[in-house]
Length: 83
Image (cartoon, rainbow, N blue to C red):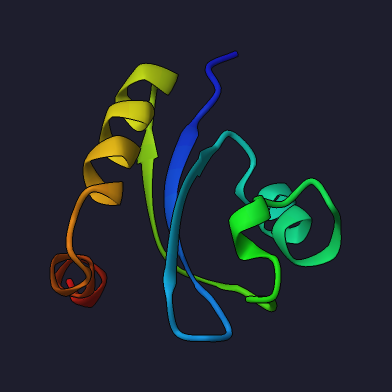
């Protein structure tokens, strides 16, 4: 069975963005909001909400895209989200 990989952007309570990657998007967002397994950088910024996602067939593709988006300025992320 081929797993699907997701690159996602979350909007935090303080309106900042968080970009991540997972193979189970519902589980990961729940972890970010409800457990200590969420990213340390999101502490104090919860709740978070999913505002964008892309689907990839391989982890490698998703990892490359996540790295690219993380390096973007906020205005470029807003343009991506708006599409």
